[in-house]
Image (cartoon, rainbow, N blue to C red; front, side, top):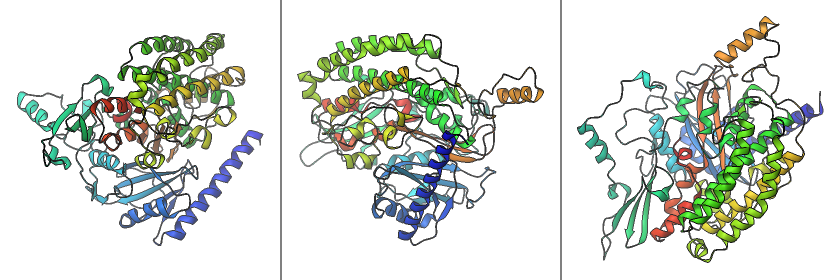
Length: 596
């Protein structure tokens, strides 16, 4: 056994001990029966009867020492045509809760089996504030009712939509349904369905001494950064309440995962956070590799880290320029885009693409680094520290920007966790939690870098965190350039995509293997896994379920932007409309990341 294999076995052994200890701890505090499921990712996975789900979640959040304070994700699986469910209870639909403990640096997965065509389960909005949108999304996509939810109004789909898209009987392709057409009557119905009715959201049209004004900001407004609407209830310029309205950018990214081969789905991941490029490939690759038992070389890990940090820079460049622009500064974005274009040129020289190279592969990367790849990278690394100092002086030290952002859109660490806020938005409150440090992956434990932390949790701190994160990304990239390991850029494993081609012209078995994988793609062993990463905007992950086929049975994409937008009403009430512009700019979201 190699040293690396021995270390891996030791880590997995420790994870199993920790998992068993956690399950034992939960059982001591929870009096009802629990089922235990083994998963490829080793995450503690418990099954509970739907009558006791809220009780169990309260135990996990409040009663456990170092409890699971964050509802990281809530989704569902249509189990009705799934073949491989060994060791799991009978279920037509399964609701899946994934919780995160920042003190333990650990996740736990809770699952509930539901029987029937239109099942129901208790809402957990009283346990977590951010359960609201997740339950509405589940209701949209699967038709599951959440009893006690304050308002199961459609979230992702239009109010007039018929059916539930992630149920297995719903068409997966445009060719499976009639060509879409709309007449004048239907258009009027669709327009009327979009009318904002305050009473549906518990709002009054008038107060004791005044009438409120209702204002649609978006879905086409330059400051909302995409097709995104916020219906505002105003008392003069003051925001009384707000209702974010999403889904205009929804294009069925999770449904697409059910009909694409494991490998051909890779380009779709690039378009989720379309500013994150190959960083979107990483959690998908890592999760498939975990299910397939694929281990990559140190060189692959280092290349992946380097390119991911390049795209973290790209995303932060755009954020920083548009943030300054939204609060009134025009010049910074032009200076910043000069550096962004320089980095795009380097990325293109390595991957062949700019924003969406889809360059990572299951088991490695598309090709090895080209000869002389480091020359332009070193020039860029030498240039950027002075540039970042210039940005700080130009933007963050600007008196008017400080007046617009300091003390605006404030929330603390506990509130951030309650709403599912991760990434820079969480660290701006004073928390130093970063998955690259606390739960390292892809070799991040081998790099020397710091975690920038704010103190006020306001718009200004959220911007300053991104600026400091750019400095740390430069440190990580510099270490990659200086210490790039030798070795293969792709592992020699039967389930990698595309498979190794060396012997295809001399060995018929290898030729057949290559042909099958290149046409149908690999069949990933039945199971499920989820390996989150610290993406450009917060925690991002793919919860993948394989039924032993050449494509995914269920692809769940947990994005940070979805969680972050849900908090807008809580941090904007009592502020002015102009303050809302600064708040939206500071969140750093992408609507494709929200709507998927």
